[in-house]
Length: 120
Length: 110
Image (spheres, rainbow over the protein chains, first blue to last red):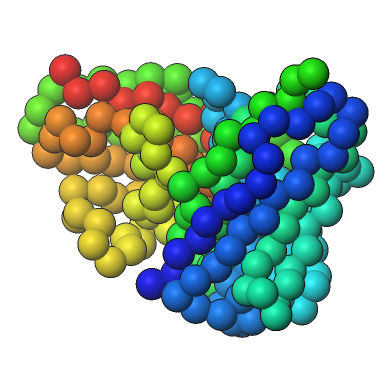
């Protein structure tokens, strides 16, 4: 059973870069069965897909965030990462990492989520 | 890529059935049988309850069922239980390896 765990700073200053890491256990990030994705949820609001990466390094981003987002995979550490540049208060959210099944394209396993607040 | 449209809230009494709709476009729900539904309790991560329109992951009660017609997908919960009170989100593949979520529906069990 895959387990995912987010880690990173809980507070980021406006205009800086938000950086989070997701550590995968119970399976290999080099599996061809999953994409590795990030989803966020502003306080009291709905879910927003940020993007996915495949173990080969291929990436796919939400068009509305594409210019500011980078997702990368580190197979040696069984981790994948998210960077969001030039953050504003609108980027304040709980950020979830998740495995997205290649077949069926649904988010199967989720991390517990981590709250990132953008404030000076 | 606009969010899928869900009712903000639905309610039902224990034992009843409720249906939550999720309306998209011909570019997402209408084009692919790749709709999934997620249940989220307060302070918890979402959990998949339906995938590929009408399939249930292992361990998910058969009280949850999904369907699709045209650009609209639906989630039906039968035999409502107090533990079903949660937020529900639909999600659809939208081409180009992208997905789009619905705005979410708060289910209240009266």
